[in-house]
Length: 238
Length: 379
Image (cartoon, rainbow over all chains, first blue to last red; front, top):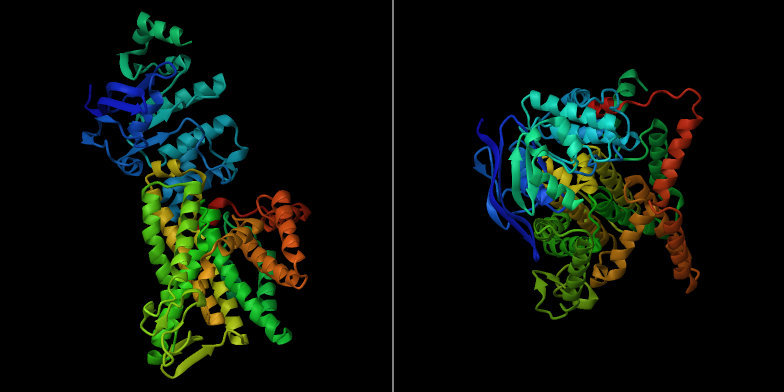
């Protein structure tokens, strides 16, 4: 396995009296798709926030490409090539798809190059032709893909996706899984945080299971899916 | 019109037009020019009093635009915009009193009037944005800053509160420290022999204020449709998301805040030059809220709407003032009705409605310029 692109070491996060993360250690290898699952309240969202820099861990360390980033704010991590898509649709509704892409593209590209770049990004996420459509008029699935498009516009090395299949139809979910595999084939490491095991199944990737803020199990998807303990915590949570 | 100028006009307008402003059509600009021309000709027909009053309206509109930039575009509501107006006004007066006899002009005072509030905004803004203060807390903190400044200025009646030849004057407002010091000067611009004095009661000041308003309006149109404008809107729509694209949101907010303060300060300096008078009451709750009302009633996300609303509301309140006691009540009813009918702003709503009507009325509508073309042209 190649060197980890992302690593968290013994991370704790305490909100008031609640231990959202309780000694979590986990590493993601460069070039892989890595799924992080867990029942509600397992600490997935908190884990995600400490990775992107929106929250700082109470104790513990976060490393990205071998460099400690525990205290770096989100915008500095983004500049190191770490990109993120939040769970909710985070495109700017009043602007067109192209105008939305202007925001991430502007940082590294000249204004004149942006329309062509934006079209290329839209084609990549399967949205060719919607450049001038206001985001509000796009379907839910299209908005999710645009949101992924915004995240990959800066050509990150690591893409973190929080529940990319939330609210999608089964056909849209399949297309999203294919998009993630395609991005990964092009060299991007992708971390998918997901509640829905069905979607994880379609990715067939290395999977980490969180439970009570710790790493509960880790392995290939089949290994995880047949793990009795994992089934128990999922059923227990349901 | 020659072919050359004809082709240059769209290029000139391209930077001023874009998705962040209502009114990007040729018709809009024709009406806009007609409006500016009408205002420019007003002193030929209006009374001296009307010209004097309208000059002040233009200054108010610059102040309103300064709030529009941070509230409408960057999503930062400040209830203390009058603080920057007041600081700009005092700065103009203090520097003007001290320099007018030495240099014979007060242009430097005008520049300091814009810079001093920008520095204050940099200090207060850095504290607010770098401690991630948000929403209503920013609004209240800025109101407190304004009230504290007012409180301080009221207590400066002691003759010790003199800066050179300028005496802060407490409740009486800024004035000369001694009988031999000059009072607050008229705006006097120029170098050496070429000096023009703009008496606040005259036509020349009126045209100067109108020119300043037009310049600020056009400058802001360019700014909000530029790359920076896109970032402002991105921050307004989703601060956290913008940060994950690699932007330091705090710096963007601080930049907008300082530009806004400089514009408010410019308005304050012009106000002091207009009346050769500045007083601590400018820092109180009333003036602060009044700016918010102008911007809200017009439509905080559109510059044109804010200017139209400020000029209209200022004019209405002057007209109503002759009605006596009932005037405030009538004005209040107008404002409440406006907010209820058009929460996004009366003139912004009307503008958007008119825009849709124009599109529909064209039998064969020409395809609107694509956003790609706009982005390309807006370089």
